[in-house]
Image 1 (cartoon, rainbow, N blue to C red):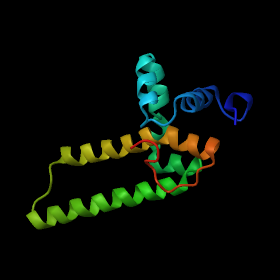
Image 2 (image 1 turned 45 degrees about the vertical axis):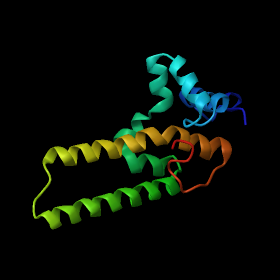
Image 3 (image 1 turned 135 degrees about the vertical axis):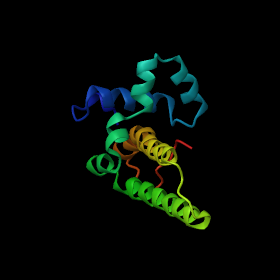
Image 4 (image 1 turned 60 degrees about the vertical axis):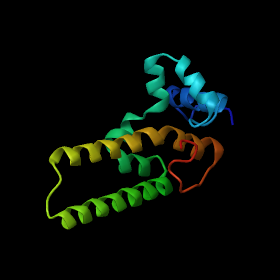
Length: 136
């Protein structure tokens, strides 16, 4: 599928799709070499989705990545339960900064996985539940 031939996607998405089409998945050597050659803001455009960063699971449901979204929610729920169990076992609460770090990491996971996951869904037709497909 040539993404630049369709009017369905914005220029921003077409740029991302073309980059993924040309250099492959973010975990590949070709991608890593090519992304280093790009300017800073273009790297951000390709690697990070700020709508997903700020709106997380809502954004994933809106753009149709519900399988990957449910998988991410399950992963985060497991880590939350582990955190609660550790707090109960030690009888103390973790510092507030720990919660802040966990929340930022959660937002980063959604922001970093969104672009390639959407590319796989829209261009490659992937229906995988793996939110880290092609990234890790």
